[in-house]
Length: 85
Image 1 (tube, rainbow, N blue to C red):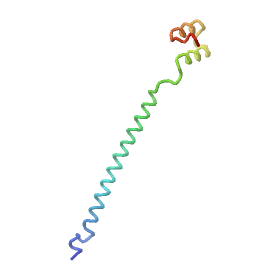
Image 2: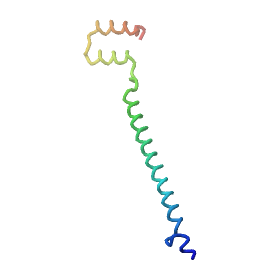
Image 3: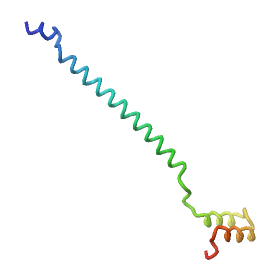
Image 4: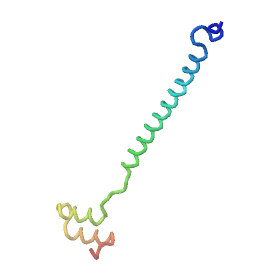
């Protein structure tokens, strides 16, 4: 008699496990989507990060590589306000 009340195959236990795994599945799917979106957003913010070198450092490197002459270097240095360095 008890077997018939439970549906013959475990009854509500089977249904509750299915419900639990269904909820768990969707939680994992949503968490995965959130992690992927955050990862993409972090990559985008790193790409647009400001340069770590100052304008004067870049100018000095260009002068050292011979990309610009002394006159251009001095003029550009004055323009960026790096006269004292």
